[in-house]
Image (cartoon, rainbow, N blue to C red; front, top):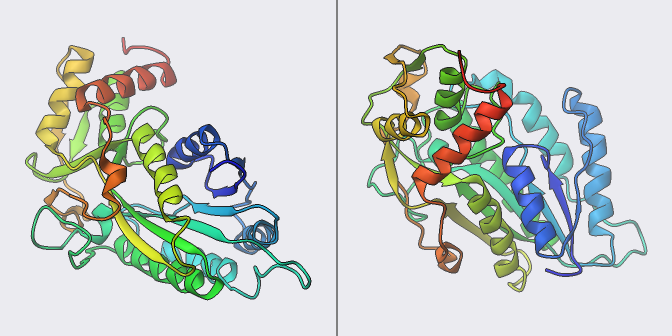
Length: 315
């Protein structure tokens, strides 16, 4: 990747930080735009200029989109601003190099959600040939974003990887966002409060350690860089191992060497969650040929990070 310029949108977020580190290790010059996310028009202006500048550069470029809105329980109305933003930023004319600039070939990556788009699908484990069947607005907007990026890439001649990513976990997750079971269980325990689980304890997910995910994204960008312009590849990024909620609770409890206070609860969004979201990938399989973080060790590192972030162990 040496000599490439990478624009990482959402580079300050959980996945974004990991991708930035992986691209820097690979030799990219990485740019993380400062985006005023609270103002859709201003955010669009910043990103349009950033993408246009990226495409007009003299080096191969990579656009990595790790930004996203909402979680499974988020209502459809909350995604309106994201739709408007993508409409602006993914306007090929708006981001075209200025007159006289030759521009260079580029590669793009969109972080999507495997759990959201396959929540209602059938035929576990799901792979790239599985038909998506989202159960919530979040999943439907991920598919919409995938389609928008694919149309843009085809028009501008960029190679695109759509990354349908399994449940990410590891140090550095946003503990104020009600997402990420490992981190949320650990934070609740450190703060001395119970955790509520809204789905059956047999509910199974694929957990991918954050540093593994970042490295896999960087490798995917490299693998498709020489493919024909307009190529669109959809790949599942996953550990390809399943763990139930009961398994996760046990692993976090073992990391603390204490029993967690976990209670069954109720939430209106419970029926939007798939009960078994195990994955395997049949696309760009070279990326999957790596030693992944062992789950128990990854949980231990996450717990240690949460302890530090929340000021030590609970009283």
